[in-house]
Image 1: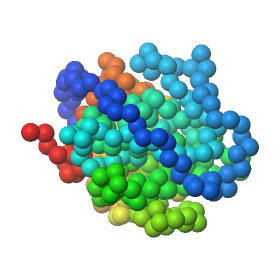
Image 2 (image 1 turned 135 degrees about the vertical axis):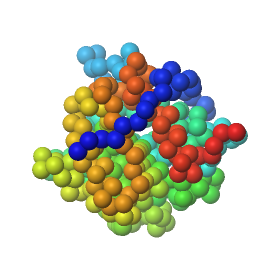
Image 3 (image 1 turned 180 degrees about the horizontal axis):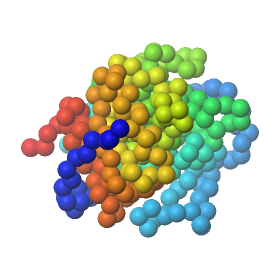
Length: 302
């Protein structure tokens, strides 16, 4: 199977925008008023687990948050004159062990704000609890987060039909799981937020992990159907998460007649977030913006 390719403009043209923090975020909102389902809180205190020997994408440190027992969302709003009413739940990666909090979280929300989109940064439960599938608790958190955003759409001046999800690596898998498990909640309903749809209106998967298995089939928990939302995928051929991971998922989307876009780059590796480099893959945010424009999520600039 050969991935479709796209002619690339000079990298500098993609990086001409500057991403800066546009406004202070709202205070974090706990997802679960009486505690997360099945959570015992016995894994130690939440902390930044970054070690001096850990990699520094783009020459900058990464905050690696671990031991999350109290999942939250933090809402980053764009400037009022840019606000499109769209929102994206952002799922950092980290192998379902930690969350790359700034690289794949706060920096992404700042970029979303720059294009008029509200960023909703999801702090989901990590690491995987013993005896549990790695995605189960995070999927509960993601479904709950999407419902909460829709429940507050009027208050936050959002369009409830333009609520998407975006994830990196394990967060990409989580975004895919949220996109393909929408028919019912994976936990007992808590309140009115759980009466809202948990289906994202679109999904962006950046160097996603765990989308397929050794049998070269889509992972069984990813139940792709005609109701799966439009999906954008980006990955590089030299990613240690093998490119077949995205190719197999993309082909299944096409077979199910789900609008999908796949961008494959020759080099770039894994875990770069949106920090600029000399690699062409650094241009992926501009391609996502163009894709969102095509979906009618963001307006064409005058």
